[in-house]
Structure formats: structure tokens, C-alpha cells
Amino acid sequence: MDDVIGKLLGAFDRAAERAARKSAQMIGRRSALSMLGSTLVGGALVPLLPFDRSLRANAAEGGRADATEEECDYWRYCALDGFLCSCCGGSVTACPPGAEPSKVTWVGTCHNAKDGKDYIVSYNDCCGKTTCGRCQCNTNLRERPGYRMGVHNDINWCMANTPSMYHCTVSVIVGVSGKG
Image 1 (cartoon, rainbow, N blue to C red):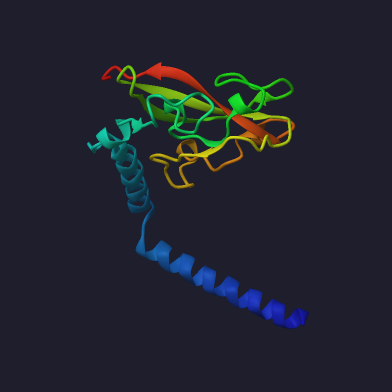
Image 2 (image 1 turned 90 degrees about the horizontal axis):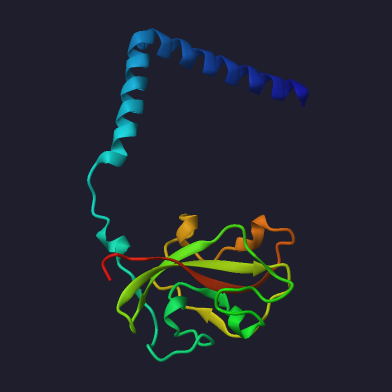
């Protein structure tokens, strides 16, 4: 068995050596460095190209104007996925006793129909206690796919805390849009 594996590894080594020698004969050091430099400079300039970001700046319409802080239709919960801390012994902005805010968060931009302004809202999971289980909201307005972690809310944001158990979620206003 060892002899078969040795032959396979030897064949692989010979094929890799042939490919390396052939590329060395076809591509000189200067042209390889030139291609590498062009790629690096071109890659650095890509973020400078113009593209339309206006769609991302629009706030999600958040719920009913008469909704209370214990209802999923409350405007601040436009991108919330979890249990409301206001139903679990805390408030809209504070974790209940025995739970602590997550060290990492996600953000959303929600529209307040009462004052006509758009607000940047930070959603903090409260960690350290078992799941609350009351007032579950799953609004997900304008949620992005999971590969964009900062704009995706189906993640256990308590992962950076010890302990990492999820209890509920608060919504803290961190800014107001100037266009509202």
C-alpha cells in the first residue's frame, strides 16, 4: 500500500515540477512582477469606481404609527429578529436584569411615521440568560443575505460574549438621517 501511495506522490511531484518549469520558461520575472503590480493597482482602484448607493440609504418603513413598544409593528423594530426585551423584563433600550448587551450588533435604518425622520437603529442582543420566549418579532425589512454579516440578523450576536446564550433584543437609536 505504501508503495502505491509513494508512486502517486512521485507522479504528482513530477507533474508539479513540469508545470512550474514550463511557466518559468514562458513567463519571466519582470513580466510576472508587472502583471502582479497591475493586478494590485487595478484592484485598489475598483472601490473608487462610481456606483449607485442610493437604494441602501433608504429607510425601511417601520410599522404602524400607533404601535406600542411591546408590538412588532413599533417603528424601531423594522429590522429586528428576536424576542423584545420590553416583554422580557427590560425595556426598548435596556437589557433585563441578569443579561448583558452583546459586544457585536447589527444595524438598520427605520422610518418613524410620527416625526417623518429616518433613524439609524442598533440592535443589541441581550446575552447570558436562556431565551425569553415572549413577543417574538421577525420583521426582516430590507435584510441582506447571510454572507454580509453586518446587515444580516439571523446570527447569534451573543457569540462574542461569555456566556453566549441569547435572551432578547433591544433597539438603540444611534443616529438620525439628515434627509428626514
